[in-house]
Length: 101
Image: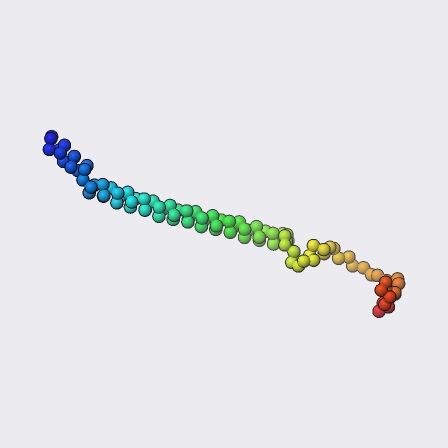
């Protein structure tokens, strides 16, 4: 029994088990870090794909309904309804003094 106690004492004081434990711990931490980075990258990728799908569906729906949130040119907000009709020039004189042709 005394012999086992001496071996345990030598084993605990030896630097080899501590070095093996440190290497094993470093390997486990490296694997966990790589796994975490891969997991975050996959989650970001899935999120970006999901957001792209939502954006494309909303864009297609706006197009289908004719909702244009951005005007095509700078005077688009001034355009109203076109009223067709006839008109007659009452006064041929212009305010600037030139004749109307």
